[in-house]
Length: 492
Image 1 (cartoon, one colour):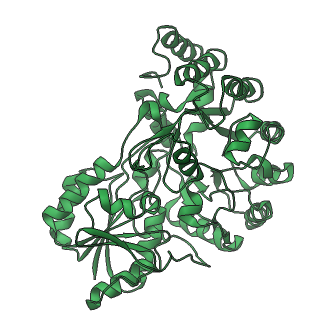
Image 2 (cartoon, one colour):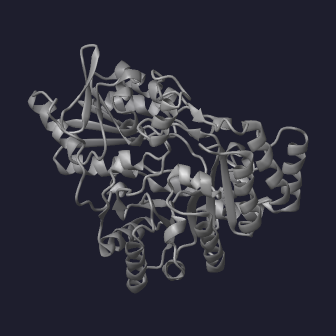
Image 3 (cartoon, one colour):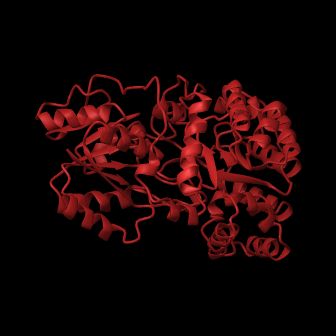
């Protein structure tokens, strides 16, 4: 069959995200013998006109659209992504008679609700490397596809689900993303090349959707296989930095240690970064190996520095663990971004002040970037959604495709924002997600400068230094004093 893959994501935010998940499925589809075309809307220079041209020339039988996010989960700077998706599906309907199949993280979260709100025929849930080619076989033979595992589909006016659960791959390898995308535009945007070394998240954080998307069982690639993927991609594309995008990089810690040791032994000279570092499993041994392997940065996800809130979030660690982690990261010299969410269940002025004060005291150094969000996006299928519904925070028939945020009734949003602003006044490296530090003119020019100077991304690792420049910090403080706070910033 002729299959057109569309990466719907168009957001060039703090760190542009290349389509690794869709590349896995496109590679599996091509390997199954189908004719594949790939359109990447994040770097498409002509936007919808480019998509229209491909639809008219390629004439696909099936159009598969990957949807990364429902929205940007930032209450004070909310961006709803499904409106752009609606424009894309409308264009497909206008210029093609192809079946429209949805997939990606947002679709796995929304499940049947995706087809209730989005003009598509079928939705593939979870990992699609097996189920999507199976769906294509059923479509090609003209057979019913109700028995294909892990799909939702339209049946008249109803949305139905197949009886079998989404398939979970026991083994997986490289994404093959180099077969489908043009890397130069991503490189100019300061992107990193994503690598998955394992899938699955065994933790139970109340707000998180990773277990819904990938399952809880950890499935791990061999360290040598990961290194060979990096070597092959680097040889052909000269990627400046690879990013390990496992849901939790350092769990199990033994796997992270083995990967670092394999990279060191391979003499692979690359820059590395990682997301999702858990404060509980970050030993000095691992940090030393990460530095030797080439890690120039990491993202750490404590979310709070108050024990009552951490307990409500079901994070599985304490403030003491976060403090020890901060000490070790600072000693390592590796640049770090730290994520904190204010307003969770159990949050009070006292607990929020405890978190922000922790940042002021323990995360105020030159290559550290603490990032706050205020309000927690309530996503379908999470424990937070269940708890909020049971407590009467929202009505039983509330549709969570709408951007609904949780704010603890014990503290006001205005107070939380003011507390972050006060932190900014004394700690230049503190940022609120509503400030959009990557979206301003200055940041875009800096990204280009860094790229052409041959500096390895991610470029957020230089934000704390930039924010500490006296004119920049004074400008931010003046906006706070003028009542504009971090919103509408045009300096960074």
